[in-house]
Image (cartoon, rainbow, N blue to C red; front, side):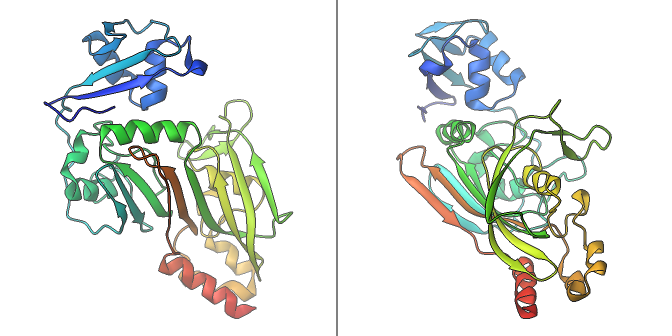
Length: 323
């Protein structure tokens, strides 16, 4: 529940039976995906009530508990709104769904202080600055810089909390298209391999059962081309960093153009029929083409699709002419 009166928002989260027994701070961290520091500040200031009473972070929540948070106005943001173009697929008072082009960073980070999708979102919707984390207001997921496709942002605290919970429950459907090297072993399958930070190259992720986190990806062959290359539909059930790219590489089928995980264009030199693709492939050919979720206010199930961007489509067209 969200209150639209005054300078503060009020959020109410009801504890489900499966969540009973968790510490109050851990329950809120899982529900809201906020930083520990932000939650501790709210708890210490008495802005978190359970059954109308302030509780310490160590309080063990019970099934049916109504946890009420009074969220003060956000701290001033260092983010600068920028009038950058946005491809808006859908928008209402709670949600904003955009089609992100390849090459666009989602949010500011070292080396990318401006010119990001978030800078553009803040210009289009100034109230977004008050939703969620100060460093990434409104965002509940992300796409890699060179991955294109659909991304949803929350415009209200109600929507932010609901979308975070849907992501945690794997209730948001995300489907991708990827052009990968080689032939997959079957028409469809599942990859279930733990993913963690690479032990030596800290900018990369890797499959490792000892320190990785559980990650599941379903795949289905859409079309096979000479090369060989294969167009694959991917449905991640989890959301680990670089999950699809790492999982595909672990099978020996990295994404075309993904030099980080073994699919770079240098491999085209070994496939005479594909040499003409080299000037067309400037990034990993991975595209988030479908997004489905339950609307946080109406409860309606909604979905959107985004066509392949021009660069990806040009490669597919070129391959079709080889057949």
